[in-house]
Length: 165
Image 1: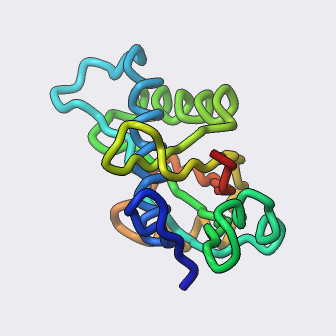
Image 2: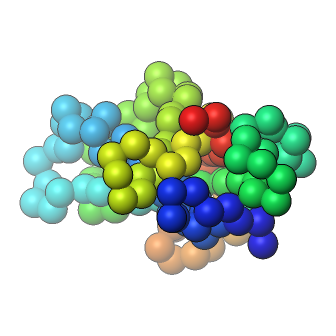
């Protein structure tokens, strides 16, 4: 497993995936604050689930991955996420999944930083978000899972590449 130690923090795939997932959830929650959730009793929530994790062959040679010297590389990753709405009536679900789509299109680039003991980030990544089309077979397979049956689902890719500090 590729890992680097920066500012006393070990940066490996697990840490990077956790940081990116947390940052995406926070960014998405902030962008959905003003969306009308409807008159339902429960507060609907956008759920994100990572479907796929792979090292990016395209970004593997990215100069920032080797910025700290030989033997200290940060992996470039391709993450695929699935978004859906929990606890909403059909109309509110459609409105919220539309707001998630808007977030993908208005915020296609995110910057994620991992902070060590000080306030300056010890590692920073650029995350490029791209909607992914689910084909008929993928949708049918997902809809066969009771939790997803009949729900509006949105897949997107997050390409994570290290940035020079």
